[in-house]
Amino acid sequence: MRLKQVVSLAFAVLAVGASVATVRAASLPDGMQGMNWASNNIVTTNWPDGLNASQTYGQQYAVGQIIGQQVQNAGGKCVRMPISTFLATGINWYLYAGAINGICSTGCKVDLCYWLTSGSTVSNVSSWYAMWDTVNASFGTNTYVHYEPVNEPTYSTQADLNNLYAGFIARYKPAAWKCILDGNNVATLCVALGDDSRLNNQYLGLHMYSWFASEPGPGGNGASWQGYYNECASCVGNYGWRTVISETGVQTDSRSPSVPFWQQYQFSLAPDQAALTGVLAWARDNNVATIAYSGINSGNLYHWFTAYGTWTEPNPDVNNMFRWSWQQKSSPVAAGNFRLVNRADGNCLDDLGATGNGANVCQWATSGSNNQVWNIIPVSSVWYKLQNVATGEYLDGLGSTTNGSAVSQWSGSGSYNQQWAFQADGTGSGYYQLINRATGQTVDTGGLTANGSVVQQWGAGSSYNQEWSLH
Image (cartoon, rainbow, N blue to C red; front, side, top):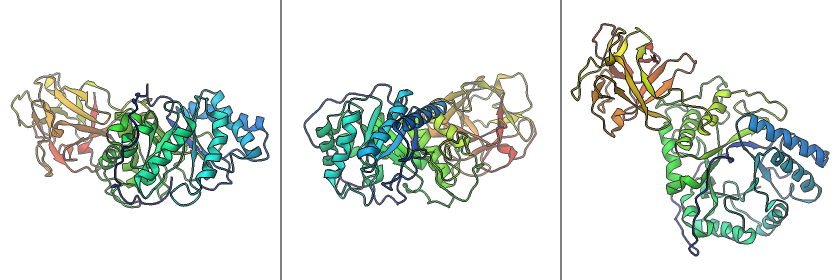
């Protein structure tokens, strides 16, 4: 991670080299999801938290075993570690290799990543190669150890970065999927790497944070999680299938870790909430592995573990979102037939048996009628369609953005007007807002309680009129 704004998303695309067959990675995300382990990745004389130069090989091996086991206990399968000329020299390398071997002995993978000590390019290629020569001599044939040659490069021309990676691959001839090649412009521009046939059969590395995108910056509100979702897609183009998000997460800010991050599908959020939700939703939908930057190191309260040896999670909501992106946790709402009961008045969402396109959806006291039963059909990890069991019609916002406009129904289509997110209230109460994909409006009773009163759309707020439980 580097705290700087991405300057442009308009580098030229370059595709060079002889044609080489591309092999799709099998079970792509499995084994690459995990967390970062470091004290300070950029300072060259730092050991990861829990390691130091006074330890023996056996002691570092034992620390590595603990790390590997704890990451797997948390649901991960990969530990991302820094590599530097300091760590890859003499006795330091002998010791550090012990920690790496300790992790691998648990069945956990390792991603060794080189952080630039200054600037945005590899300034001394000879010493960089010497470092990787040492690493490769020890781990070149170890299938548990992966290489991330450069963290967040920013080269003035795309050709320079492509040529650097091509030289690296030509020198070490790594096995397929051994390397994670970070995109240009702090690991955001991956398409040109995917287009280069010399770099086939290696992962592409994407990093995404709230300050990387064109959404409102840190400290403000109004960010769109859909913006970050779409940003991921634009950064990798058609190469999502070979992408690893080797860094993402949330930043230090003034808010406490009690701020709920789980399933934030509203349309005006603090940037870190919007970024984490959008990035992890995209990763889940596209079967992309994610690595949490704030993993095992002392620092802000959003870290997975605040320090080596402290294995409690200060903010499990954040960690559960990563587990959700790894498809280890299901979405809060399961597919199936349900009644939707309003929190404010206890009435059910009811289409009154109407079958015409554009007919209003209303509310009614609970009954045995299938007019009140809706088949919840997942479209993606976020979006659902709601089809009425009695009529086969779908809940539809009709594209309206006006507060108080009616919620209607329509025959099935591919329109975003018919797609809805279930936004949990953040307290575990089991109540959700239904947020329309096309407009961001929520399903709201308008405070009306009479049988047959028309259900409305309204901007997201805190009213119980907008909250529904599934029965």
